[in-house]
Image 1 (tube, helix red, strand yellow):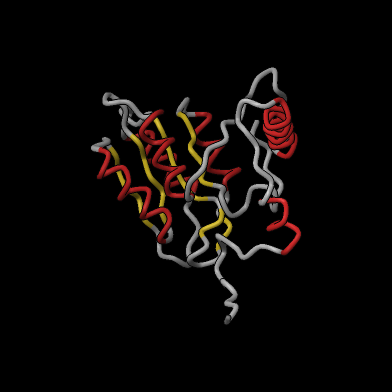
Image 2: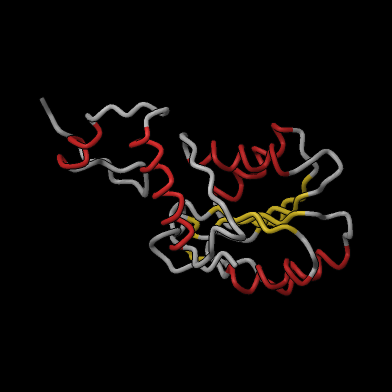
Length: 179
C-alpha cells in the first residue's frame, strides 16, 4: 500500500504515536473524558495569556471554515454588520460564508502580498457607524503572510467593535495575547 504525505498547512498527517492514542475510545459522559476536555480548555486559555475568570473556550469538531461559520452564525445577528478584511483565500472565504449565511457585511480586500492597513480600517469604521464586528485571518496561509492583528485589534477595540480573528494556523505557534 502506497503511503502519501499530505503537504498542506492542515490537516496534517499524524505520527504512529498519535494514531495509537486515537485508538482509545472515550465516552463523553465519563470522568476521564471530561477531565481531558477541561485540561485542554484550560491550556488553550494559558496559551492565549488569559484566565478562566474572564474567558472560556469552546471545543468543536470540524474544519477551520466550519469554525468560522459557527462563529459568524452565532455571534453576528441580523441587525449587525461585519467588516471582513481579506488579503487571501481564507479572508475571501469569510465573505463567502457571510454571504451564504445572509449576513450584512462589507468586504475590504488587499492584494495577496499586502497586509491590511490599520489606518484604512480606522477610516472605514469612522465612516460606517453601522459596523459592529471586524473579522480577519491572522496567518493567511495562501500567501504565508502574518497579518498585524495587534494594530488592527487596537483600532477595533478603540472603536468599540467586536474583533473576530481566524488564528487556525497560528494559534499556539505564534504568541497571541487574547486580552
